Amino acid sequence: MGCFESKGHKIFDFKKKSFKNGNNGNLPPSLTEKDRVILVTSWQRLKTDVEKVGVVTFMKLFDSHPEVQDAFLPFQQLSKKDMEQSAILRSHALRVMGTVDKCISRLDTPDKFKDLMTNLGQRHLNYNVNEEFIEMVGQQFVYAIQPHLEDIWSEEVQVAWSQLFKYMTYYMRQGLRGSTTIQY
Image (cartoon, rainbow, N blue to C red; front, side, top):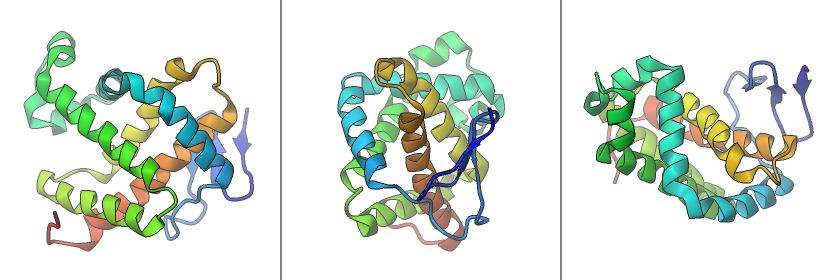
């Protein structure tokens, strides 16, 4: 199927289901006004199933990348069934979904968005997070939301959500790389 490139976006490789980073990570990914409208509108629909979306995101992540499950101490050696019932997983999934909600509400205030995600990256220093795992969450989130947005799902919706997570990941990595002090 190939790649998609449009003004204001990175190159999306549909075969690999990920963005190619044409600028080596030096500049944050961009969101167009159309992306913002898509994100706000579709998020309003997703909010009704936010816990389910969060749990499915992490279950898909752990299923496709078991090494990520092992990086979470509370989840090491848990079976899939135990994982699905885990209050700790639900709590973490809800925190991640809360972060998505905050990001959506900060789309028009880029400095607040940047501060939120940079601080989150700094807090994750305590957990020795592998940077590659951060990007994986966004990919799985996009897969998890598709069934909830089936009637409006399109290439544009997929690209908008993928861009948002690239944007989030960019600043979270800045926090992981650039600071040894934790800000709350």
